[in-house]
Image 1: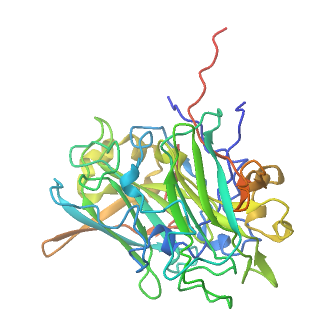
Image 2 (image 1 turned 90 degrees about the vertical axis):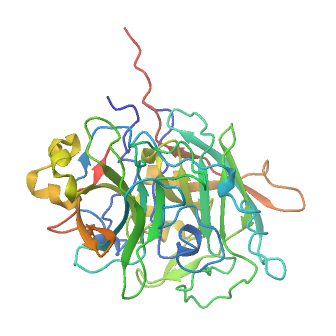
Image 3 (image 1 turned 120 degrees about the vertical axis):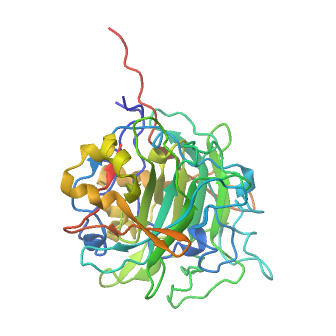
Length: 232
Length: 193
């Protein structure tokens, strides 16, 4: 018997989403084959603190070469939860993002915007007992891309999560509350209207640090154990 | 009904290399997983898995990531990833420019239970892919075990070969060829659990 919930197809974007052009040839068109969950699926890579380099949750520190990176400091924090609302401790959370001007460190990024020699734009951490993650970083900039005429990606942070097994693996993107670019973005808008708002981080005064950085709060929900049915 | 709903998946996009596969592409950041799982003291037959990711037009796909998860030589999955033990976890980019092959150096896994043939789970991410896909790699020299494998038996006969890596011995090196077709007539069988 399968003990974890399945992929919730109503929450995730369809694989082929014509408004996002490259999805049309790079995604499967046949239905996946549903197979039983075995020891292979019920296990997965679990990481300990030896996988974390210095300052790996502080992106304002971990890329410094000769000074501070430039941009608006933000704290991005929240919990990794499963569908039952249980906090997931020991989850590996990786992030990567553009700099404050909308330029990635990636050498293939040719967007005409300044590089920041003191900003790597990548970090990782492991959630504690209560499922919380927390990164200190810079607010990423928007940047143009070639999907359609005058196309711009809304500012976003890529998130990669390893939960308790390979079925709970998730890579997603976090967006910012109130961003006018969201309604024009086919990647964000690939998910249903009801589901895509779950990728938006809310501004949080509670997590804002006085005189230092704005706080954003975003919980991430992954697959979880099936709840035991009640007996009549 | 569940009290919480899953956060939607999104593509990795084109610019993930410095974050997910930094050492492979020469960035100054540590790897969480790499394309070489073999360390001093790893027991088992050392093998290299290599292949290409193809799109629906039959073109090689760069901007892809392949993660692997496998048991050790004795059929046991690692409890926690430690640098001095065989981890069973790897991650590689599908290359850039003309050579878009991926390559993973590992060991052939043992049987994880009495029913299943030896196998490795591959999870694929890429630009243009809104949710990762899972597949399994089986070994061409395990024909007898493959014939009894419950997952392979569940598949239509004509699609089973998409999950079988072909063993090629190149001198002393053992290579398994495993191409992944994301779409089209030869589309690889992708799995959900």
